[in-house]
Length: 105
Image 1 (tube, rainbow, N blue to C red):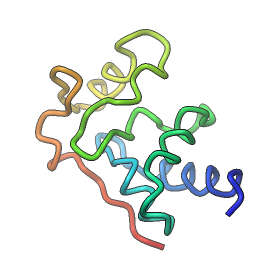
Image 2 (cartoon, rainbow, N blue to C red):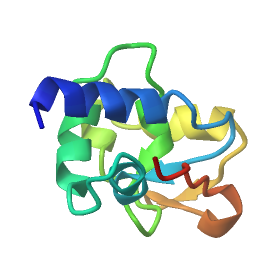
Image 3 (tube, rainbow, N blue to C red):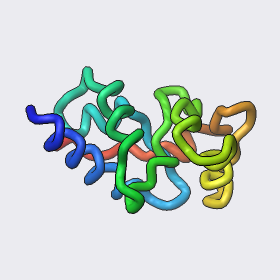
């Protein structure tokens, strides 16, 4: 699979994450048929276009592991909190309640 195709498929899924919800790198990888590629999803999110809500993608336990890729140290958290998602110590509070799982294709 070409890297460019992979990244575009990641972005397509990420754009579907509803406002006020998050998903994980692994859930996106599984949804595009590459279940073992969570880290590649992370790389894709590091370089995503501005219209992709990268702040809504976190690790499998709800940690804001991608936050260092946002301008300003707390921008990812601020964006999530502006959508009503509570974050404490770089961890989403009540993660299961705000977790969105994309359909596997």
